[in-house]
Length: 256
Ligand SMILES: [Zn+2]
Image 1 (cartoon, helix red, strand yellow):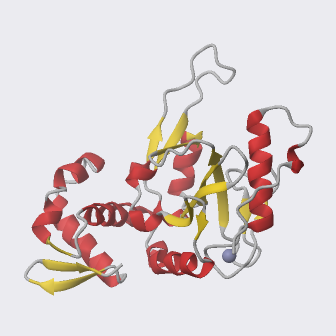
Image 2 (cartoon, protein in one colour):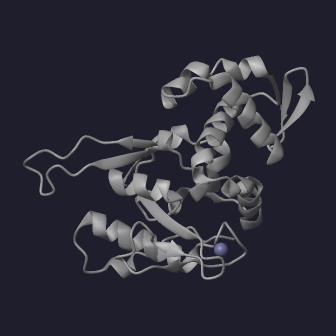
C-alpha cells in the first residue's frame, strides 16, 4: 500500500515555506510514488533544470510534473509560463500532471494524475501579465483548469487520506490511453466532446442532448461553422476508441 506519510527531515536547513514544501513533496514522490502508465514501482526525480518535468518513469519514460499545495483547489492549478505551456501543448510534450494536497503534518491527503494527453487549450487559462514593479515584469503565467478536463482524465491515486490500489489506478489510465493515439490537433475536439457528454451524467444519451452543447463548443472553436457535423464526427471517433456505442436512431451508450 502507498505510504502517505511524508518525511520532512530532508528539508532541514531550508527557510522558505515554498522550498520546504517542494523538497518534502518531491522527496516523498521519489521514494514512494509508482508509475500510473506502466507497472514500474517507482518514478525517478529529474534534474531541476528539466523544463516542467519533475519525474520520469525509468521503465516507460512517462514524464510527470508535481503540483502540491496545502489548500486544495480542484478547479484551478497555478502553472508556469503560458507561452511555454501552449508550445508544449502544440508539440504534444506536456507531462502527466500530478496534483497533490497535503496536510499540515505532512500527510498526502489527495493526489490525482491527469494523463498528458488530456490537456486541451480549453483547460489552459492565461493569467494577467505581471505588473511593471514585479521582478519578472510582463511575464505571463497560466492556470490549469481542472474543471475543463473530462472526469475520466482525473485519476485518483489518493482521496481524503485513502490510497486506491495501484492496479485500479493503472487500469483507469490504460482505459483512456487510446486517446493518446489521436493527433494532438484532433484530440482537442475529442476531449471537449467527451467532457461534455460525461457532464450529462447519463449512461445513454441522444444526439440532441449533445447538440445542446453547440454554443459552448462554438465559443471554444469560433472559426468552426459546422459544429453539429463535427460533434457527430467526434462521436464516431469516441466509438472507434471504445468510449461510446451507437445504439441506433441517434442514441448512444457510454462504455467508460
Ligand atoms: Zn512507467
